[in-house]
Image 1 (cartoon, rainbow, N blue to C red):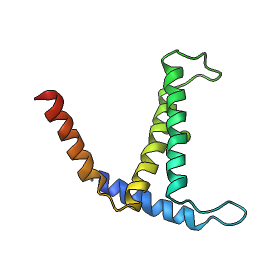
Image 2 (cartoon, rainbow, N blue to C red; image 1 turned 30 degrees about the vertical axis):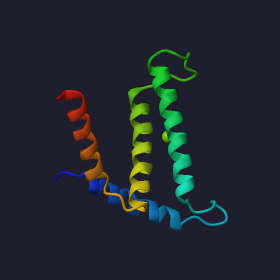
Image 3 (tube, rainbow, N blue to C red; image 1 turned 120 degrees about the vertical axis):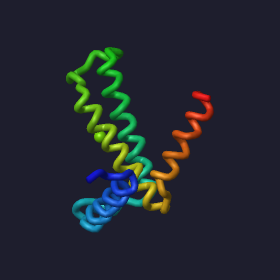
Image 4 (cartoon, rainbow, N blue to C red; image 1 turned 180 degrees about the vertical axis):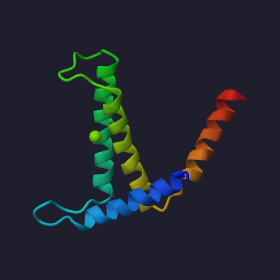
Length: 108
Ligand SMILES: [Mg+2]
């Protein structure tokens, strides 16, 4: 059985909702779209730091690995899926349109 992007988007959203319901005064406020976007930018920064380390542009305080990059990319994908679901965007459909646009623009 394979997982589609739509399946992954729905799964991330369900997980997000469960986590968000558990927030309370001790753990902090539930996340809204503004916090989601802020988190996405934070994860993008973490991704950039790992790539910088992997490519040798910054003496790493801690060795960067492909596994670390995979984790950061997954963090970004999770929050992208959550944002898409929040705004009722079919990301799978849009993503395929986008790739098709790249093919038409650069490969034809
Ligand atoms: Mg991260």
